[in-house]
View (tube, rainbow, N blue to C red):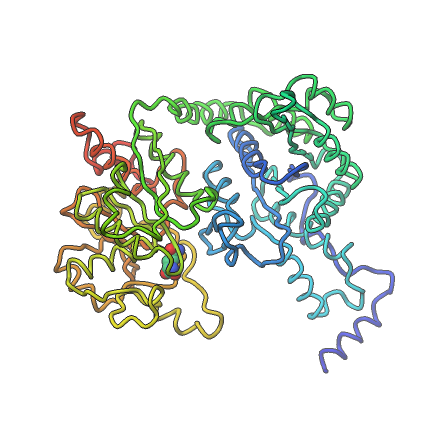
Length: 591
Ligand code: GLN
């Protein structure tokens, strides 16, 4: 009540003409940061994130500071509750933010650790606006989509610009132009461009060129209509990138140019590419990077010497793509096997490891619901290594345990990630330590022998919504173990986590006596984070998700180790180095 009175008093003091909300953070200077806004037309799933990250990479190579941000139209506050089957994997940032998989693309392409400042959803925007309203921050004004909600979006972008000191903020708008969900984001971008002034924002429309099999030629109508929709929203794109299966013909590009007021030389073709890591070269060849620089009038900020060096390093990496002489098959068990996006980071981490080791990694997806001890040998007969990735719930758990048992007994290289780490502990407890009923309370809540249970710290907060242990954590590495060798003999490494369950500490001694080594643990807590079997060619499990921090030029050591072990197994006559030596040869680990 007292607060309400204060509020009313301040309202009556204020002029009814003034606006109390400013979309500018204090001290913001226009012109320092430019904005490159990427929107999609025709359909979603065109790879806006890939395009935007590749363009950002070219700018970063030129010595410019870049900061990406993805704006998601959905009302969820973060991506933590989203089903990866529908929406692709949940990517976890070092600060614990659960976000869209595109953030993974940005981290990998730019070799940056991003934060919650690089990701927002409508849920976050609206919740901030509503909190401000309850707090009385709008001082008697009716809270509106414009200026308050669009203002909040602009404020978010400018705050990122200011905090990061970026030369260019890359804004990726989720969804497609014409969606109700992202319409206010697009309006906010129109306002941003107007307020920031000429040459401060560059709009890139990513569109799709259809090529119906029955016609055998490229058709531009859908693209034209999509761009028209954008024009109707008051946005004139400066650049159009045409996605298509094959290179977009000059005729089609000319049509699009005429229809959208975009000069022909700024209508680019972007056809399918076998690896996303070769896309920057394609964009560079087309001159899109200098197109953006000229539009933003920041050619004078670039450092060409920096670019020469960065580009040479990148080309050393991309030159190796597609030149592998050997191939291995890695089996990946998982229930979301129909949607590759749900395992994007694992696929990337395997690709990084393969490129570094000069081998092609083929993935065999294994649905484990019907796998058991009797048929597992057949299921795994053609794989050279196996990954049991992260997962939740009970489906397929016994099949995964059967795969792990087979891998352990038949010296098949194994990497267990999070759930796969927990399943490896259960398998070992059951089949090596004789704890026949060992299980996880996640799989069997009434288990009489839970060796995996909810973390005590999570138990305490369970009633409050039960959050997970999320984000980057330091992992203490035990000297003279395989993990220690793989991580370049570092005493501590930083990995990312997303889990609720852990190994019950009272069993650790028993497991270690039977030959399992816990080579990584949380500092100051008995939380086991890496396990290994020294008597096996390669058997590693980790409670973390090392795939989230694998980078093109710095493959994740456990992944590289797995691929190296698979290579050794597949080509016994080739005298290949063991996993530890192979990983050490790739690079000196740089935590
Ligand atoms: N479901 C397990 C847990 O919550 C594993 C989580 C995961 O694999 N990300 O601990």
